[in-house]
Image (cartoon, rainbow, N blue to C red; front, side, top):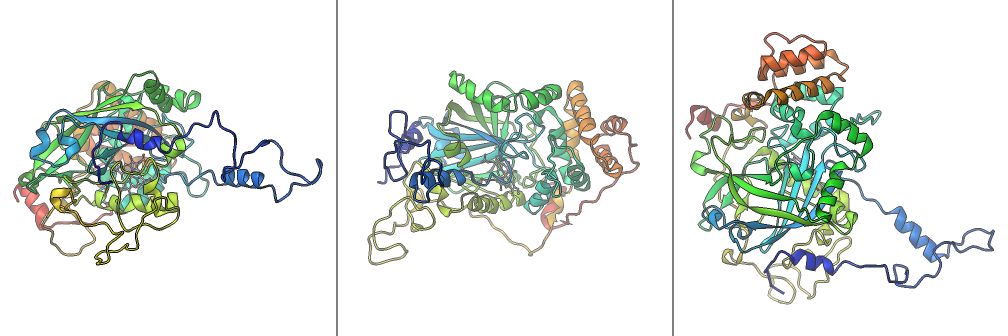
Length: 538
Ligand code: HEM
């Protein structure tokens, strides 16, 4: 079957093949044998030992014993919803050949998973944290994942720092005492030693990190991605989701109280809104930068700790996503969904952002650990709505039964192996970008400015918002026992704004250090491209 047409209900119809309602059915074993008593195990005498031959007991207990899977190493706690995406018009056609973004008649099914990052699966919803905003578009050209967050920048510039970042922010390795908030010495130790985290720290201390509702938060692709049009021309693109309800946050006191009284606050809010037909909607917007302008800005487009200010490149609305259906089963859908920033469709490609490049390796790698099998792509929630044909028909838990005696390419025997698609038939073609350079374990010096955009953020805040940032810093850093770390963090703030540094210092028993400088442990290479950026020309 080569049918690649998709409508808003395609995924739902596909899932229907896997759904079942057990309510009017007899209880059976996994083999379909009917069971009349599931209350008592088989014994040698009513007061005797349980018999090994009790296949119903063995199977029931074995299945239960294996009922969990490793939780995600980050973003373990999440909530999912189904829906669809529809572009407003075909105006993006000039920039991308991705059909789901350019055909206003298309309604592409989506599955979204919102998440917190640090806490375990059973943690509280309302903690101060980044929120994940991951969208799976089941398009007619294959599945595209936009795996984003609700904050437009990230803590680090190079994926090689990700394990360090996560180790610093997760519970302590000795006691496993978690942080109900982002506060304990290890995280602030790391942040204070890594100037590149400063911009994101400003966002994390702001009200953005305690959203009132998943329906009321932004989403960002964070990295600069690349659109590619029919002619093969590339354009840099940043993705934004804008909630129709506007962005709203909790205040810290609410967040703490809810953490105790209703740790499922965000999950419940999303579920109930959808149940009562109050469908969350998000507008997809893009910022487009012509390739010729790659080196035009005083920051590097490949640096994920930077935004493109909207004054420089305005947002362009593209289409609307509506979330209109709750999952039937949390485990089968929300837990088993597997996102991956490398799930791309023709018309969308990656860039050399060194954070994105590392993510392209990490997601499938971790999913192999989470699922234990390369065949997780066949699970109902993960399978594309278009046909999947390849020669990878083996491995643990293979579900599809590929017919034929040939599973290699090229072959002259026929029968089995699928054929190659030309580009005109939708084959994905990687963007032809010229790449050259010396092998070097370093970053471009154009990534070196860690404070300007943090300052921009601070200056854009109202007085109430500033007050919230300062009191968040008092709360978080007030729990840091090591005075040097508190001081060093205030030093970082002094590079953002002296006013901020003074206000934070006043609440945590330290002075603002004079002439503070914190060298990054990263190596910045003053190469030709970064020199060109600082001169404002290519
Ligand atoms: C989940 C790695 C940066 C957004 C994950 C997972 C890993 C991971 C291992 C768990 C995936 C799973 O078990 O299925 C990394 C690495 C990063 C990075 C190595 C940097 C080098 C980012 C950034 C964003 C992001 C910058 C946002 C733009 C997400 C989201 C999820 C996730 C939303 C949860 C997906 C879901 O709901 O299942 N990440 N991540 N990550 N990551 Fe990242």
